[in-house]
Image (cartoon, rainbow, N blue to C red; front, side, top):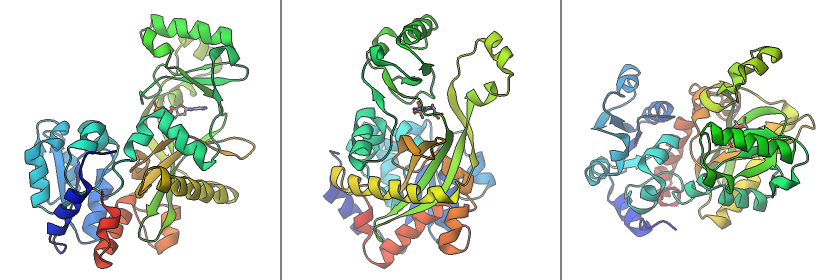
Length: 363
Ligand code: ADP
């Protein structure tokens, strides 16, 4: 439970001039379309930006106010928070915001109204909580293998924390698992204490689709906003090397995200896509009230049985939303014009103000 006092946030919000709201976020990750979308919906925008990182915001001209800081993590400093509140700011969270501000700080000391649910961020960060939410929702996830002695088919071995898949590996048997653990230790890719934390799951052979949803608290409905697939180093470079040479290189693949491609799914998969969105948002309402609120992403692999298998989630705007700054095939269907995730978020705030229901979608 977050220690940021809900009543205090609502009081701050009450004091805001609703005709003069600023949409603010950290200058990184998926902030460009948030700023562009906020301006398109008539809001002022403010970036909290690390010195030296301001170029994109100036060149794309999407920001009205610059709060320059020595380091991104200064966003939680009291003077920065005060500047944000003075501007009637509503903060849009994204992956870098959470990483730099720090989850504990967002939960405990960041007293600025945020769009979304600050309590659900921990549910994507901790694998056990994430799994609990997914299991409870009844969506298809990779089967968990409790013990390395039980490895039968191809399995994926992961270690705690998002580390770009560094040190993750595939094993087909217990012997192979033991061998690879030894190699990883020798390379210092993992440490002894990581081993007991190793998470082993079914390896899903399939294609990657990261599905970007928007849950509208005002409409009580999930929207499909866009889909991307990941462009990861070194795995995507490695597949360009002929198999024989791959063995010579001896490279262990890593999955460091470097970019994203926009994609669409075959239409017959879309019922599954909406079902996943509906199930996870319904379950989250009970488990982490008010549940998902605004953007979230389910990272999936689709196998040749045409099962959409969810292996990871983001409980806020995911970086893959950058593939549809000018709208996606799906977001176009709702409005008949290009709609980015950032603009959809701003639209929700605008409707919240219009319907006098802002307090329902702010935490
Ligand atoms: P991180 O959060 O550390 O980046 P992920 O859980 O997103 O790690 O996994 C990194 C990559 O590993 C994914 O992009 C995906 O390509 C691959 N991957 C993850 N889980 C599985 C799985 N169960 N089966 C096959 N590939 C997987």
